[in-house]
Amino acid sequence: TQLLEQSPQFLSIQEGENLTVYCNSSSVFSSLQWYRQEPGEGPVLLVTVVTGGEVKKLKRLTFQFGDARKDSSLHITAAQPGDTGLYLCGFRLLLNRDDKIIFGKGTRLHILP
Amino acid sequence: EAGVVQSPRYKIIEKKQPVAFWCNPISGHNTLYWYRQNLGQGPELLIRYENEEAVDDSQLPKDRFSAERLKGVDSTLKIQPAELGDSAVYLCASSLEHHPLYEQYFGPGTRLTVT
Image 1 (cartoon, rainbow over the protein chains, first blue to last red):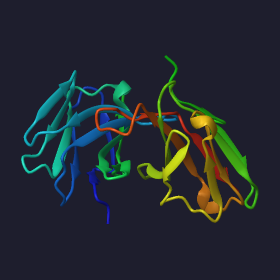
Image 2: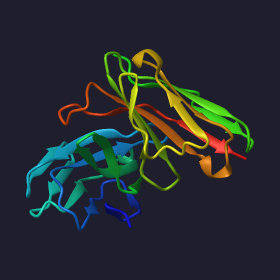
Image 3: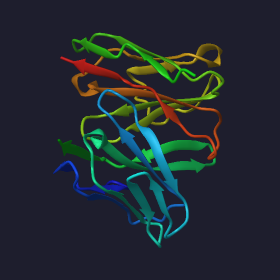
Image 4: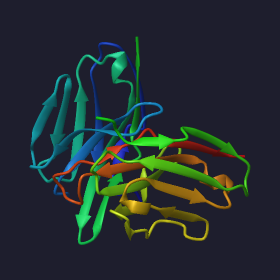
């Protein structure tokens, strides 16, 4: 079973529409991260959420960390073709000698012009 | 400042052939990671280096995979012999240090196709 479940897996919407994608888990996290990966590129960190209930905004992107720190959402307002890509949520495991990011499977977003 | 550089960007080989990937991390970054990203999945860590020391290779299939980071800068990841299931994107990432304050920066990856 995946530690981080992302939904939906695929989303194709028209330019100008709003959308929300989700990252859920049964585990409690000290923080969660969101990345965007464009075709042919590596993931790029968008934001790290740390506090339960926290909301962070990055232009038209709004990230929320659940109160119980088990889930997170990404809301995009007025989507644009440039938002197309794979959105990954991840948890950076830093414990003893461990240091790695555990990713969900991602949501593949396609914005139609 | 240049980001993480990887080469080649694409590689197509037949099964049972060897293949090698190269990574040049961001200058001054002590920690280097190799991840593998299968189609439709998120990246998964294969190995992590602190300078020239491999401190976590627990997820590296050691029967056919090997890696090195001589002089604690560039790194190579090798597969010998390759199998069909090795087709994936191999991502290299680097971080200033092994610390939560320091972000991991990813390279563009090498897309491997084994036929």
